[in-house]
Amino acid sequence: MAADDLVHDPSRNAAEDDDPLRRVRLEKLAALRGMGIEPYPVSFSRNAEAADLDKRHADLAPGAETQERVRVAGRIRAMRNSGLFIDLHDASGKIQIFCHKDHLSPDQLALLRLLDIGDLIGVDGLVRRTPRGELTVNATHLTLLAKSLRPLPEKYHGLADIELRYRQRYLDLIMNPQSRETLRRRGRVVAAMREFLSVRGYLEVETPMLHTIPGGAAAKPFITHHNALDIELYLRIAPELHLKRLVVGGLSDKVFEINRCFRNEGLSPRHNPEFTTLELYEAYADYTDMMTLTEQIVAHVAEAAAGGLHVSYGGVQIELTPPWPRRSMADLVREHAGVDFLAIADAAAARDAAKRLGCALQGTENWGQALEAAFAAHVEDKLIQPIHVTGFPRDISPLAKADRNDARLVERFETYIYGWEIANAFSELNDPLDQRARFEAQMLARAAGDEEAQPLDEDYVTALEYGLPPCGGLGVGIDRLVMLLTDSPSIRDVIAFPTLRPR
Image (cartoon, rainbow, N blue to C red; front, side, top):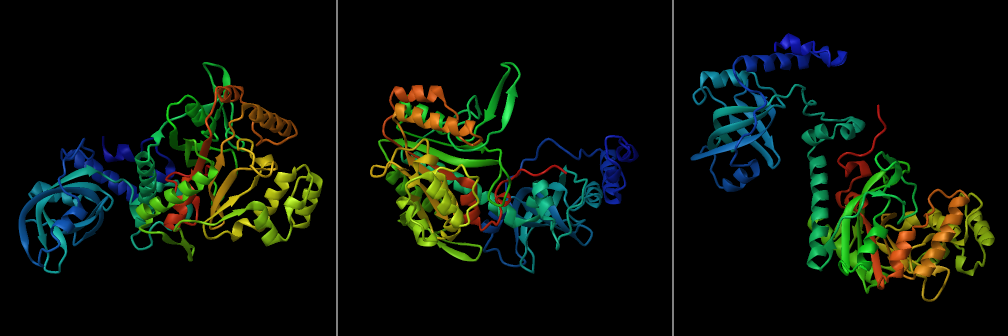
């Protein structure tokens, strides 16, 4: 196919056809094929990476040559002196390539003249260090691995358009080392979690992403339709109820899952409709055990991903060394807002107190929702150092055991760092009759207009009637934790492909 045919392909849009830089590269592509060179070969067998070569030859003196023949591959990020020197980047780092006419055949020199910044190439050659100290491969053979038809952003200004960075993440990763490191740290966080839990006897499991009944959290679900069964299904908002079914069945006393959850809610620097959680359950444990476990998990992954327990976020120093303080929600509201909700007897008085504190209410809130509103308005953003907030209202915790000393509360905590909820945990409710009553109360709230109230899951209640052992459960928001450990200002920085409004 001629270059002109490629340029005027009707599948291309007008802007692409008019791009002179792309036209030049298409002409080079046609020229390469005319020379019998396949611009997109099947494979290339390499035997070295840039970082390995740097380490292996750290003591090689300036001007020294070796007889070590290597095969490296990567993307051209810079070309100097008409291709005499090439900066080749692979996933591990950069290696300089020296392309001299004394080492390359005429056909290879012709190939060299058709290369561009952004192309992926393989290089055979001998390792040396230049007199200026640059580790270099003297190329004896070049292999084009993928011709880049679009120029990369200009080197010194990079990819400045923040929105474009998220929409074209592949381009962001090519140009921005910090973006690559952030997502690599995310991978280390997840790997460290798995390693930590596996060593302690937790079994990793998988539960459904498609639910017939959305449950396990207070959230509005995404709805889809299954054609063959002709039923509505919901993308899961939490794996909780299925994980506890596995504990009922005796699959293991310790189970965990790391996977996606979906909530049909707004976007913000801390919220993405699709997000990743760690959720685990341990038989014969309670929420106090989960507090210790939370501290251990966060400390372990901080060591693995950030290199220590002292991290900086937004210029603020965060100390992650356990143990962390434990304070009740009501105590914190009394300290920061001056109102003792535990001394308030009914919902109407609690709503009045919350309104006096400037909380935006709909007017139908129960006692627990009023306390939660006061906490969100006056306390959350002050919780900078790690803290476990306990004493959650029963009204907003339909899956947690009642507090042993106050029936209005439950055995639940949320862990806050930098004003964000990082973890949520319960002593799990395992009384099937109490659970049914909680679900029925949720159904009444749903009928009254609360779209996030949880529907009754009959099969889950049936599972509880076969007996769930005393159980502690924990959920950890991986995205927010990675934000903290990478000093990332937005959740979109730590998700490879965040949800964006279509252009």
